[in-house]
Image (cartoon, rainbow, N blue to C red):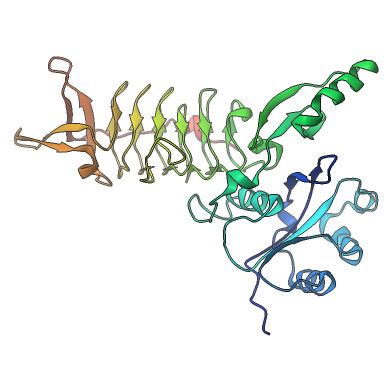
Length: 336
């Protein structure tokens, strides 16, 4: 039988609980789809039969890694468990190592949001306590805290969640992040992006280029280059709440402070501060001759050059042609 060519091959190092179950896995960029000789050797030695699989790293392969990573002394004394992930297809994740590899592919900018099959990832990923001494199984925390107290050591619990912080695994080039705890592994952050303290970026979402993020980018949402999410602005995701439409924001757009977006928009669009647009919002659409008609917001999906406002006298939500341009401050986005 002829084996399919692997879409992805990666070697990672991770953590397990006391039962030997995977908690998380870190994949260095250098060990994702490395040179073909290493991949072929690993396949042969591991007995890989095809499909998608997570397997132990053969000792002979470990020796080859020393030349790739240039830290031979560490590799000879590895204490953490290591794993090989081989993927012939982009089927939904089968285990923790495969799920973590896909999250790395997004954050390393090797794949864009919504390009990978992440169906069922919540049922695969365990809930982990992210602590000052590394990832831990929450059921083991109480004993661990007590043991450390006895030796006058203290553990800081940063969060108990299924997803870790992005910057514990990947450091994207050319970005500025004010609060790294507000960006999950699996976020795609385009070069030139600035994320301020109130900004939040979920997994499988992000920015494609230079952007200012002071609001929330929910799962599945994509923000294109040159756009600005004002303070506490919100975008509607697809994880819960019944929304099934992937929300996107085109180039050079602005979501004002405390505004919200529940439809995909094209380029050069503005939503005024405090205005939340959902698919069912009734909008008075006003043309260049000042004639108007009422439409549902969903009818304006993907259109360019729109300005959404709320009439302060009538309370009506209105949409006009946008004649303004959104220009980001270049000094704020030269993130060398």
